[in-house]
Image 1 (cartoon, helix red, strand yellow):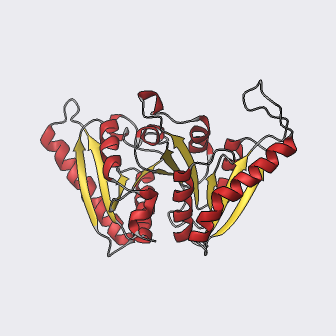
Image 2 (cartoon, helix red, strand yellow):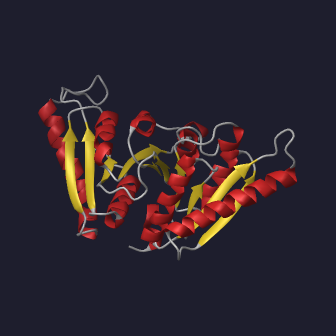
Length: 287
């Protein structure tokens, strides 16, 4: 797969956000391995602002030292990797937005050091996942080289092309090349608007099976070596993905972008998966 296929973005690097914490170090290693898989460069970023009693010169010196150590750790993981570093003298949210404009993917840890300096990472990565314009991967304490299938959550009745494209591309490069396409649903009578015609559970299941088959057929042909498992699970969408994440190398969810300020937020499924899933979680924006 060409490097430009990552998230369908024509960019040549993956950005890893660091703050010197153990969580950020784990995410950095994951990002370095991911960059090698995709044939991309790695960009290591740190955001900071001078605090009372902490001058600008001292802040720059601290940032340079932290980034130099992070670059060395990335190269110890992937020795021939193209690694660049950048420090942002800016608020963390603005730094995340800036990095996501040019990156193919933004990678960060689920827990930072705490306090203002680690707002780029936050305790769960929720802010970054909500505002980023590129896919965000939050690495949650699993080994960076974790094996297992790629799991993607899909609304079988309204599948998001960008989310499926990202998941297939990742599965093609992850160990085993296995993709689990998961749709969580409640097996009960259902009406699309609460007032229209009521469909039985069998009707909904049949429609979901058709939707998953149609959504994955073309992509399966494009990635013939990826083994695809289409699964309808009788539980909530978030619950199905959290359970599936326990054996996953990467769990993928979507975040709908409406193009307005109100669109810069996570939906309930992505929010729950980021909070409760095990292992790395990718949040992919789509329209």
